[in-house]
Image (cartoon, rainbow, N blue to C red; front, side):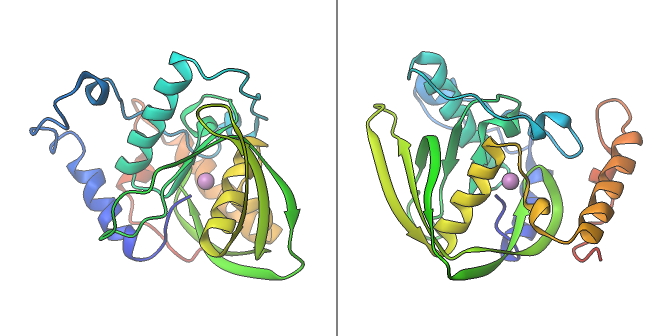
Length: 220
Ligand code: NI
């Protein structure tokens, strides 16, 4: 999930700096050096509609995937990412809801599942790294209970509300092939789909022309 408003300008700046800002090494350890920013797949890529598979074991490859997901999420920048968004259909979600001046709060959810939702609803303006520069208000249950496994494969359960609840629902949707635009009106969804299909057709040499266009924040 992408944080709206103040993150937009920062996002564009970081996008521009990508590749230019790597002069300073990120860290001295091989552990950090081994992480990689992966490409985020974009609408209308059909893989975004696939249902991700459950994780059965936390092995070296899963840890590498989680590391890459954090690296990719922070670089984007985003506050949440599902593995399917980097083309890996496994039920893994990374998240960090810390504000810019706060220390990082990385969270990993393996095989997350919503077990309870409140009747009370909340509306947030959502965005998605796979639907860049599009933001729309989405109404969802205000509070949720989510069960998941941590990186030691220990079962966990949390009750969340506010931004955490919204972000968890948004990311768990991704693991089920559901996007936030599925929760808005058909008219608005059709307009977004049309825009992204058109942009994909114009893609030349692997780079979408949409990246060079001015973002339109209020389609429909
Ligand atoms: Ni998303």
